[in-house]
Amino acid sequence: MDTTETFEETVIKTIEEDLSFDLSWHSTSLESSLNEWKSSHPQKPYPPRVIWELTALDAMADNRHDRKPDEPYFKPVLEMVNRDTNPPTLEIYPDVKGTLSDDNAVTYYQARCEETKNPIRKARYADLLWEALRVKRDRKAYSYALQAGNTYLDQVPLYFEQKRGLIHLTNNFQRAAEISVVLNTRDLALKVIQTISDLLSRLLECEAYHYLSELFKTLEFIANKFPDSVSSQNWQQVREICYNAIAKLEGQKPLNDLLVQAMVQGIIISSVHLGDDAIAWKYRVRVAEINENEAKAREGGEGITNGSLVSLKFIQDALHGYQNLVSIAPNEKEKSRMSGKVEEMKREIRRLIRQSENEMKSISVSVEIPKEKIEQFIKPLLEANSIDVLPMLSSYPDLTPNIDELREQAKHMSEEAPLTSVLGKTQIRDGRIIDQTPPFSNEDALSTQLGFWFQSHAQLLDIIFYRLKETGQITRDSLLTHLQTWEFVDERDLPFLEKGIDHYFDDDHVSALHLLVLRIEHMLKSTFEQTGAPSVTVPNERQIREQTFGDFLRREDVRNILGESIWYYLNFALVDESGLNLRNDIAHGWIELESCNRVTVQISLYCILQLTRLQKKNPDDK
Image (tube, rainbow, N blue to C red):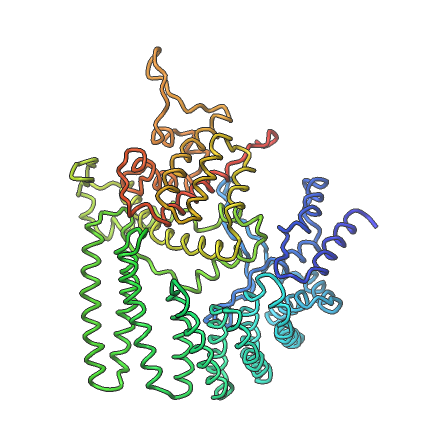
């Protein structure tokens, strides 16, 4: 057997024998084999069978409940433009579309589907074949779809036994439900319903509230497609589970309002299907009230940045809830009461807008990110091997700004609001003018768009860090290890970074921010000094002084090496007066206590992660 065949068999055997949901080509079990191949075959791609296995392993499943029937189910994990090549190239991993259109790959998946004893692999191979063959209108597609759906349901014990298995439980149940609808197969739909019914109590015992919520959505999805398929008994069970879940949640401190709201939605859904309009109404009102109360808590909460803006989002949700309640009110009294709440929310919105303007925060627009987009965005990070999460996160698409796109938006803004081009800008801090600019320029417009982008970015980053910390994908040790193994790390920075990370995990955001932000400057300058690019300037023959961080960042060589996305991110976050300006605000004592919060600490951590993307250039690279 030659080297190529041995390598292929090793990879296939490793994948075949692994019954976890964590296996990926990034994992330790495969890493050595893949690295050995790269070392011994530097100019040669992986053999086809290995590429097909990695595609089947790493393809991302799109489990949105509102996904259109013609949308592809399997998609790449990463699809990004590499601007380091000339011309820029589109990098895709894995190339799902290319693989599924390859007849040789399809033949290979058919053989693997028949021979594998691994239920996780069998379901995935069958599902890929369903996707590949239905496009060709191949009659075998139907049988592969049924095989995939049934195998997903048969994996129930594995979902509970394996690490992060419950993530796959909810996703794969939705996929089985979708297949039953596309094939119009009521038998499979009824099997999904019965299997869910058998699991609800167990999930409640595990306090897996989020996964319960997802299964309720799957039941509703089936009920809308197959009338009367979900029985009254099923909906009674859902409602009882939700009542019990809320009782358990309300006994916990602090109260997780978002999980309570998810269970309340379950009561609403089940009550609507049971025809209990009074109960549905009662809990719809409660959802609106939860959003209203959350707005009040966020505005006055400790360690909340841009509290008015965060509150504004929840007040808007409350407003929409009350407006909907006006239209479905059961009587005139309730209609009048809800109308009053609508006017109250409108007044609150006007107040919060005025308040947010007075706070003079550089991030000034609240953006609501759809939940399904967030879940789709975070999922590859949750499913990745833990040792690869931080490198993956540091270069994750859409977490650094697309400057070309923002320039286009800035140009559009200038065209839509031409009066801004003749206005100057004055910045005031503590009653003193710190900056005055001439009439609005293209760079000002870009800075404004960058501020809008940072608002949505800050919200998304906060959710990502929360989920990764909650699942153990990011820990104190993993962050510190990632920094310790960075090839440009300066030993002088490590004690400060370790302390800063400790303070972040202890929710001491004031200490964390003051330690981390001030090390970023030294980390970046040290990196350039290690490559022979000193961070000093020579004003005259007799004087040598350290460059300010702003001057250093504006150097052409620094800007070119960092690239536009990273450069604009660091500049806006750290030294731009019209941006967050964290470095200067901390160094000069301008920062306010409410700005030392979890969100700004996470932005500073992400600045550090951006630096760890810098690598020593291979001498052979041109």
